[in-house]
Length: 207
Image 1 (cartoon, helix red, strand yellow):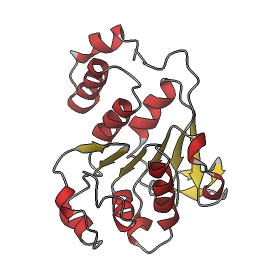
Image 2 (cartoon, helix red, strand yellow; image 1 turned 120 degrees about the vertical axis):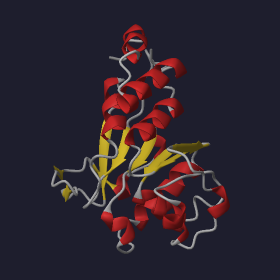
Image 3 (spheres, helix red, strand yellow; image 1 turned 135 degrees about the horizontal axis):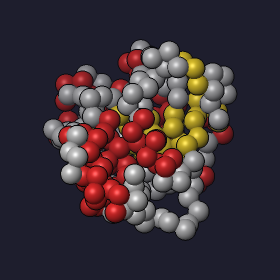
Image 4 (tube, one colour; image 1 turned 90 degrees about the vertical axis):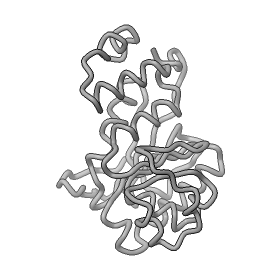
């Protein structure tokens, strides 16, 4: 069961921007919402954005109005724009502000390159799509790159684009949404289609 039952949770901020990879954060946000977290979308402005899958998203907040103290977590999905200029650099700078304030950040796919350019991966264990993808940013954290599905170092979660379930697993662990046994069972169900995990999840009231 959730370790936060009976407490007031701060919302989770989900960054949204044009070309965002809409498949990468769905497992995480769905499970967090089911556990009682409000998911608030944060755009460059309040103007609608469109995902790579064609979904139109109306942001709840503009990035300029975001304060780390108001949130439980900042999630940065991948997007084509991360590798097409500096349009999303303000989101990486916001990630720095969150981490400096002790508020966790979770970045997947192209967002990891944005954090690399911001210098946030130089001194933290991390992963991404492949090591040479981040190396191309010129960052100084190559020795901290880990070949893994997802990595948590302190308050930072990173993952590559093919690991949305592992990305969600690390977020659920980081926020202590469920105990370790339930998180492991949830991962086995959604990543491995392990029907045996149902019993654990039902006992923990996760499903």
